[in-house]
Length: 80
Length: 406
Ligand SMILES: Cc1cc2nc3c(=O)[nH]c(=O)nc-3n(C[C@H](O)[C@H](O)[C@H](O)COP(=O)(O)OP(=O)(O)OC[C@H]3O[C@@H](n4cnc5c(N)ncnc54)[C@H](O)[C@@H]3O)c2cc1C
Ligand SMILES: [Zn+2]
Image 1: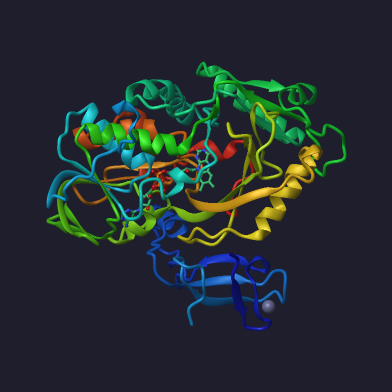
Image 2: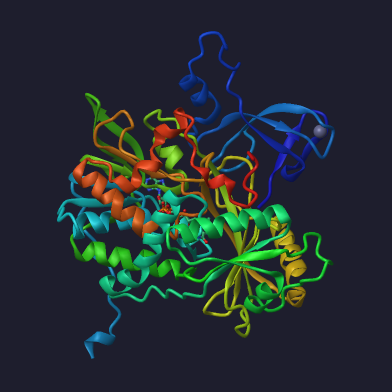
């Protein structure tokens, strides 16, 4: 089953119109004093519990806006 | 004729409050690890905890292709040993795993892809694994019906033929391992979901489950694509994206496809099962998720790709579509690790869409690792710490186009 996401401009659209941009993780760590290990951890390591998470999505086949939404990886659906 | 009466392959066992070894996940990795813990290391107190039923995860959903044609020597070594285990296990488990040694063919659709294929063949030959580079005519001899003209969007430039590969019946592997493990005293508990992991003084002490708390000395997280969710119970971050990968089968027809084949450019792989269906996959949905969602979007993609490669398939009908999880790492190689910050905790994950062919061999070495506490030499390339040292495995240099991160 496919599902829909809510674009802030276009409203509910099929997920295949969008590009997944990953978890919202706050600002990237300060470059000053960032160790190589901390940097690699930041770029590759993720905590993905089976519960809703805030994410970035890009409406590439629509209006072209980047937006945030909360989605449950256990059901694929948006949680509002 | 008592031998005709149906018998359970594995025995129900009482749920004990403590086991020396607890394995989370009743897929082939968990079952194989439990099997080898009992068989090779003589450990008598082992439990496999499975939230649904054994084989619920990728182990019962994969397209069953087995091969040893990876890009790096470290990976080829491991998968080659895995490939050689099928006939051995068929004997040992006294269970027909239906290994069909039909060989595999990876198609190349550009000169760059052919250069990649030449590197693959040389890597395999270097370590004594049989593979050869074929030109388009030779590809069509192996796979009749391939369109060799310049009509396809990505015309066929050649391929990598790998005779030792083939297909294995995935359910049989799950059942056979469960049978062998159970016969050696392993307790398999289905419908037992792990909801939390207990630790004390930096040691793992047990798990909290839907059937109550169970103590243990050593714990293996072998939950396939759900490994990230289980590790998250201890706040352990992993370089893994759990993604759904979809597969489907056509109605059965007369045998004509005698070799499993794949095409990176078309994102398609296919084999004809022993029942006659074409089993084919597979695209991955890009968003991390723990569902088993399948979508019409990929039915369409798959139909287009197959028909373009093999025009005679036009009009053939798909009967079923399903999906399972693929736990993708950034370097397309797995993670087998016993240094996770908690003594007694082990992880076997990140197998992506390669974890079926490697299940028994991974189980063999994870059992050795967990029983001895010492990392077997063959597992050294698969440390978690490699990602913090910028020492990625070279698997992504193979010709396939991988996920959205490349
Ligand atoms: C469509 C598809 C095609 C594939 N094709 C191939 C292929 O051709 N060749 C190949 O080599 N590989 C292939 N794979 C990959 C392969 O199937 C997997 O890598 C492999 O099955 C992983 O086995 P596993 O035992 O580690 O995990 P799984 O088989 O996923 O088992 C993990 C088990 O853990 C259980 N579990 C999860 N969370 C918990 C919890 N909290 N408590 C208790 N139990 C839990 C799950 O229910 C599941 O049964 C494919 C996968 C898919 C989905
Ligand atoms: Zn929009």
